[in-house]
Length: 171
Image 1 (cartoon, rainbow, N blue to C red):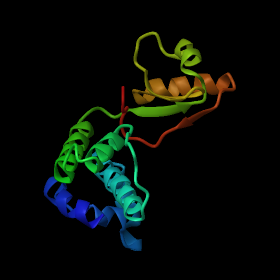
Image 2: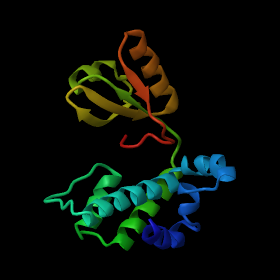
Image 3: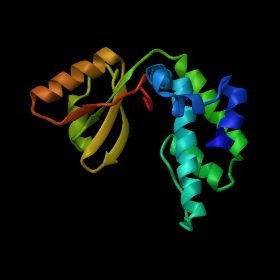
Image 4: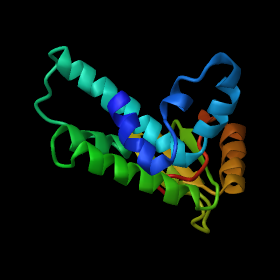
């Protein structure tokens, strides 16, 4: 965490540890700031990378690595495809650019992709962001379109779970 934080200071203009480990009186403010994609993505990378290196240091040696989204950058860095410095620059830049996009929303839906497609708006405003398993997907899109989809799926008795995100990632 310390190594990532020291590298990220030049990209974020602040120490990510202040957001990850704030004093009690600043926890609400730090939580609000961590909701900003420009900080969320570097923070997630830092924790994922730190946990992975801890496991490796403890003797859990991967034979192969893969990841999803930020996890791809973590795997690439741990595999020496990207240096840690380059990966953190990329993640910080990605987060900053995404922060500038219009806000959006995401929704986990407990349906197979083939069944989910029939419920998506015809205007293409909602995208399948990820197929998580044979019976679970995540969709993303504008806040109002995701909210309308959520209500419609719940009315049909289908299980959904709004995700805590600021943007419509993977859309």
